[in-house]
Image 1 (cartoon, rainbow, N blue to C red):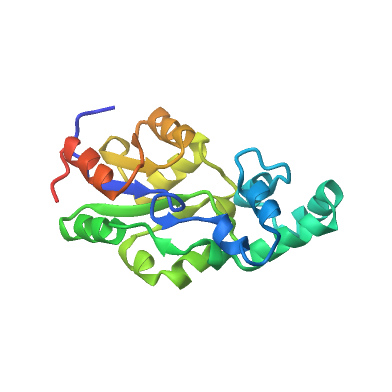
Image 2 (tube, rainbow, N blue to C red; image 1 turned 90 degrees about the vertical axis):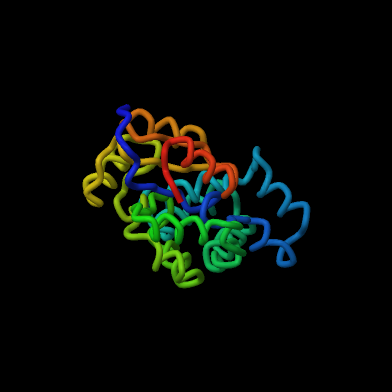
Length: 209
């Protein structure tokens, strides 16, 4: 990495810009024990594995028969409900992030998005939170591109599409392997905790807001 001044900041979406809570979508609609199991790190029903396939570019209709075969009609129905009511899993923009994006733009820095997200549900983010679309100058979506963090190709695509200088970019993600992926292509990767920590990390890299 170079010591060149930072000019652009790239943000993951879920867990960075948006609060993503599968539980918020399912609670009150399904048995609580089942919801707890689905939302556990060791989910035996594979929700996030199926969702990860969607994030990589597969269509829901192509994946659904696998869910039925592997999990049964009951769990498959819950998965269909989850994807069909995806906006309920996005209860809010995370505190301070609109203000951070606005401050970056006001001070002449670029603000961009790079997310692992299905092409079938990503539109919900901007429909529900149009301010994000106003503040971000562009977003690369894995499900559209059929590329997937932490693989190098999706970072390189974002850099090329947005016309960015690798060593002048910072990337925030809440998943460590995605931060490593950014580092490996020469972007300053930072593991996201909250808006205050993001501001402090940017300040340490010379960003003045």
